[in-house]
Amino acid sequence: MIPQTSINKLNYTCHHQEDESYVIHMLTSSPRSFLTNAYLIETAHAVVAVDTFMIVPDALALRELLHSTGKPLIAIIITHGHPDHYNGTATLMADFKDVPVISTQGITDCIRDSIDAKEVKWKPFFGDEWPSEKILPNQWVNNGETLCLDGLDYYFKDLGAAESSSDLCFTLGMNKSVVFVGDVVFNQMHGFMNDGHSQQWLVVLKQLAGELKDVKTLFTGHGLPGNPAELISTQIEYVGVYQNEVAKLAKGNNGLSQEQKNELDGNMCKAYPHYQLAEFIKAGADSVANELALS
Image 1 (tube, rainbow, N blue to C red):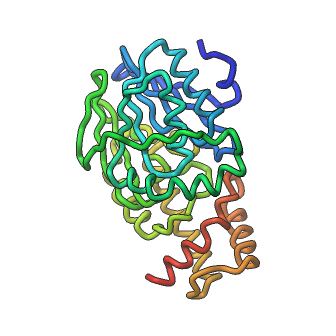
Image 2 (cartoon, one colour):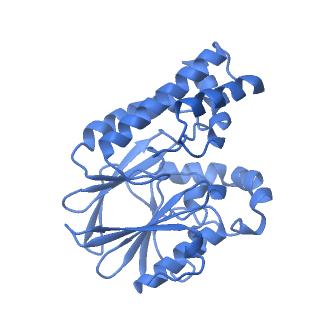
């Protein structure tokens, strides 16, 4: 039974993986905290969390969902170094102090290098909802490494720079029927382009298109889960369209004027009229313009 306190403020869905007897609980934050997904993977005797939200109320909802399972938290996996995916870690593990926080060395470095700047930017907006305690990953996985957690195998792939400056994905179980990709793939959402790795993002997406062709379900950092081939193909298209629109407006310059950003916003909203998170469109324009100018 899902407790109807903080959880009822977030969108909840449950995905039963009958082939290997595990359950994926998915919570989605409000638009105010970017419609971010966090997950609990429930197995026979324990729970593993995947990402931990940005603000305290969302992380508390995830913690309530964890307690509702009646099972202990045995690990947290952080998919990349953006605060809407790691900021709630301390809140989630308040009752499980020695839980390993699993990620890559690259992601850990990204978090460490940007955590203070993210707080300066976002704490004035979120106020007391911004967590006061931060916990960085403390157990690192290498590319190709497998961990067995409560009888379920996690197969990790270090993607390097893609949507962010360092990204991680993993498949689950003997059948590898599901994959978690963090923000490397969005679904019906405008992409976060601020980190300026759009060229490498396309390289990674094209690699994943081949590697994940037999996977049934892709779980995203933002948006509903879906078919990997379809979602990856759409993401490749989106990044290409964004690059082309920025290039046309920038004309080789390393940034866009406010007027040009407004035009970019209008063009992308016209191309993708049903997509959410439109606030990301202008935010990433200068990063991509600079990247393209240097290429």
